[in-house]
Image: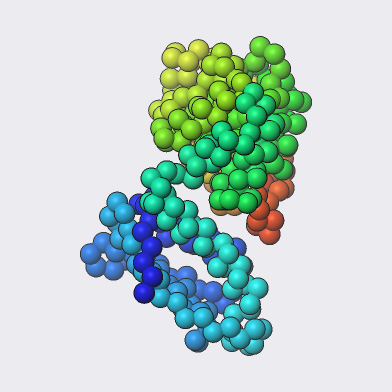
Length: 322
């Protein structure tokens, strides 16, 4: 019976997201609580075709016990189609593999990616650093980054708007930060906020390796909910001409309303929101379309290295508080 050790951050909702990749009505997900604070996850697809059971404990390091019996029956009436099955295995295995590598090496994926950048990218060349990260994500370990297609959309919009000050919520490893910084006009400023201090440390090193100093790109480690109210007094940000929301979609609406409440959005400001289709931000989109203060446009894309999974960047133009 294979056992895989994974960190606490992995949760069953990620399995649900990967399950959505299948888009197959015969796949059933049941999620229920059982005694001793354990969670049980079951995937069922027709009698005897695919059975996947796991229990995830709430301890700091959880053990997933995988019991699977696969009977490939092609496109039979009750069987799971083979391409769908391999899509499931191909999408779900990176989660376990990444967690397993984290535990063995003591390093996160972002830290391993930065080590790769140090040995393969040209310092002071943001474009080459971005290309190196794309290569790492495609050929080594999947990196949950924006990807080159969205990056080009972001860079084009920044060049068109020529903002004097940009606010980014969700630095992650610094990938999207480099796209923004490359496109900024001289004298502009970028403030980027990352909640996780360990990830922020990786992003800080990557940004400096690309050649951007603290006068141009300032990284703030902290929760967006706590940082936004302090932007004016502590970081001398009176207003942001362009805002990128790239952290957790469930926080987009909260943080947008915080920006409005603290008058950090001037009339005509541009707000960009990533991942509005996958995993999705329906309440955020509903608010921006119904409140009457935003003009909305959606740039359709897909996830990097998963072209079948449709996603998009929402572009909002703020009309003012009235």
